[in-house]
Image (cartoon, rainbow, N blue to C red; front, side):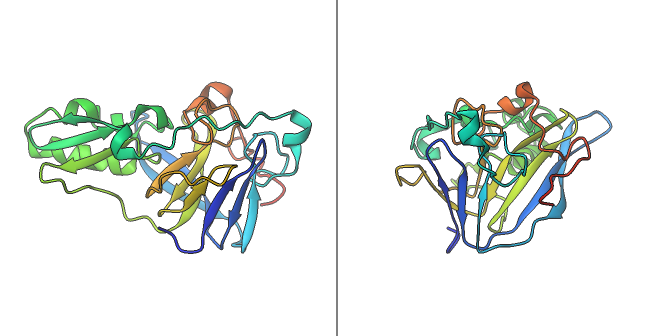
Length: 235
């Protein structure tokens, strides 16, 4: 758990971030086949002891809140369950490794398909496929996929506490907030969500699984200014 850093989801309003945490652009890198294969870190925001980040998608000062949620009549009702990942995820058991999958938190970053779909690769009995399942699972920003060895060892990428502003040039959109390193996220009524090494929070305002991303930003064409090269005034 990240000491001293918390993200509070406000009722029909923004995310209140308490604690000095790095915030930077994180861009999905694609290969010659347009498959997602890596992350590229971009420009960083000044680190502050606290800040307020837009959740409705309407702010003119993204990624910060400017109060637009009130004028937009934003309905930020939280619908995500407070179920731990181990209970919510389904186990896809293979001969060399197990792939855990919680589909409702998918942020549609598409790393799982770059070298052969992870959910198919897990069924193969060869070392290359085992390593690909681990690699693709570790790149997943939402933690939808997690690779687990047959002896129960869980693979997790080493992530320090940080918040990434996901950008997806291939899809032509901006993505969710990539919350890393075990930062506590609490609901509007103060209930903490299960703490994880990586989760993605909706910032387009359209997810049906609020506060978490469900990939709707792609259909919504969400753009916080970075995709078209017109960085927000706060940068």
